[in-house]
Length: 250
Image (cartoon, rainbow, N blue to C red; front, side, top):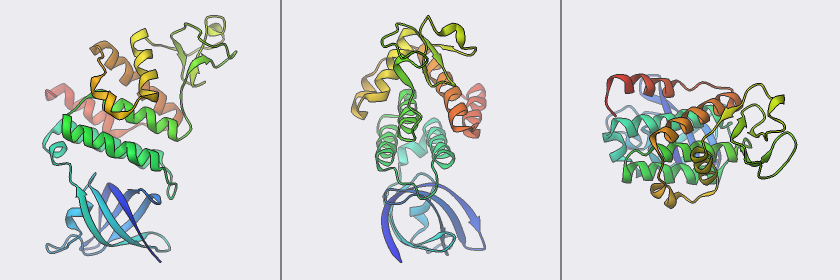
């Protein structure tokens, strides 16, 4: 049985002499494993379509253990992202998140569209930390780990005025309930406002959001801890980026 789908290549691994095994995030089927036969040959028409974080239209043949990619057409190579080391690293980080957070054959069309929009922003506007934070927040929402910003997760009180967030509980805690939580993350008013905005804003607004360096650092630190806890995963690319930033100006 055959099917077609737009797809973004998450990663590829060499297999046999001329083949690759791919992890692909498809619009139609979600994340799938697929083999691209003969793709390492110089004359392969698939070669350009299956580079990491390329956007392609692919033809699949279903298999017992994995699909086979039979044909493909490149839709976007994101050349500007590839030419900028920071953008390329951030795109690879997004691919790592998808690989570990999304289950096989579990379609998420809204997340797929957000992925394309963030890659397009990186390609057209360059690196902006808020583009990555937006994708992290939207992924958490789609997968059912949406943080609760508008009420206390312990008592349900709305508009608490608190900036204390309990990562394990997944939301804000008010002053009355705070003593019952051992681990709270104190967010600045600026960071909390941006997080609320990223949870509900449209992609075109992202480039217009202004944030201080302190808020950007806090947002990254907060979401890293939140994702580690709720997704149960440390992301290697995040650590790679941090280490490179110590020796390479980005």
